Structure formats: structure tokens, C-alpha cells
Length: 307
Image (cartoon, rainbow, N blue to C red):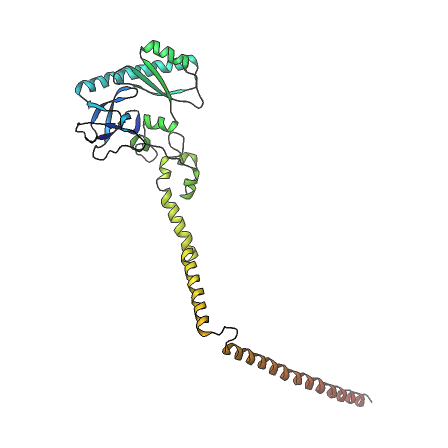
């Protein structure tokens, strides 16, 4: 029998996990009760069984199962757990303040069976919360787990509205966070103002990477347009011209330097240069000889006038 799977996500995470559904008939947006490594929990189907595929590198034996569709008593249990989560989060904040720990509590998640509670927090450095866990377990009478998350995960968990006026991408549809750099903003000719290119989490906005590839492709086309042609096309044309020149030389058997047309042109150029030199020579000599007698006659006239 072929195993059937479905993609399920949970309240405190947008990541999609694959679960075996067996003979259950599920569709997108159905609420289900599943078995996880941390206990029994409720999730929502986001990938239909017709489209769900087991990820590469995941063994079929290690895939957890969907127990059932959520019933009315499951939804009542979910409401009770949400009230207990708020109370547990308030107690945890007071304990953090009491112990003076440099950490910020984001959210508390109580498993559906009520045997374990997970506290998500952010911190700049590592925090020694061993005493805090002991105190919380004694106060709440459940197993306590502390999990440190990033600032982007915290923004997606809490939700909000971005400067675009829409719901945050990290809380709406993003399942993984791709790296975002200032270079992406430069390529898109955006003002490098931290207030304009940063989200509510204080990091660069994830949407900077949505159109980055299109801007890079457009920049490459613009550079090629400035040059006038594609470098590969230019190389091909040069090769064709060289090949055609070699073919003509082979066919004629006479090189350009030895062609009769070029030799006649060279000879005619030499004759014109020699003729011009011969013509210039006599003119200069005659002009010099003419100037001599004229000068002597003028001197004789001046002497006669003076006498």
C-alpha cells in the first residue's frame, strides 16, 4: 500500500512538516491532531495529500502520523490551553525579572495534551536559564522547555503590519528566511536609509530579495545594449571575417602586398612625388637668380640719384 502524506504547520511556526495521513481524507485548512517528538499537538493542513511529497533524505519510518481530524472537544481544549499559555507567560516574565536574565520572552506554547510547555525567547547572547527552568517547572507542574529564536522568527510569531500597509510576510506566507544584504538595495537604486529599508524587526526587509534577480538581469541587458552587441556575437563575427579572408587568399594565390593593383598604385605615387620635386627645384633656382640682378640695378640707380 502506498503511503499518503500531508503538509502541516503549527501556530508558533510557519514551517511545513510532513506527516503520514493513512486513510484519512484531508484537504487544505483542515485542523488535525498529530503526534510529534514533543507530544500531541494541533496543526493545520497547508499542503494537500495530492501535492505532498516526502522530502529528500527523510526515511519513511521516521515520519510521524496524523491521529485524527480535530473534534469539538479538541477545540475546547485549545481554548483552555490558550488561557493557560497567557498565565504561564506572565509568570515566566516575572521570574525572568526576578533572576535578572537578559532575555525577552516572545510567546508560550502549551502542547495539546498539556504535559509540556515551550517558552520562546530572544537574547543577544547565550543565557544560563537552568534555575529559571527549575522554578517554572515547580510552579506550573509541567515539563518546561526554553527555546531561543531569532528576531525575524519573533516578528513572524507575533505578527504585525509592515510599512507597505499589509501583513508581515514572515507571519503570512514565508516559511524560511533567505539572507538579505545591503547590496540588494543598491542594485535597486533605493535610498540607503535604515528607517526605509528595515522592517519592524530591525533587520533588512525580506521583500528586498523578491525582485533582486530581475534587477540583475536588467542591468546585464543594459550593459550589453550600451556596447551595441553581445560579446559572444562579436567574437563569432570576427571569426567569420578571418575565415573569409583566408579563403579569398587561398583562392587568388596572390597576397595583398603582391597584388598588381597595389604595385601600380605605389609606382604612380612615386612618380608624382618625383615630378613635384623636379618642378619645385627650377622654380626656386630661377627666383633666386632673378633676385640678384634686380638688386644690383637698384643700387646703381640710387648712386646716380645721389651724385
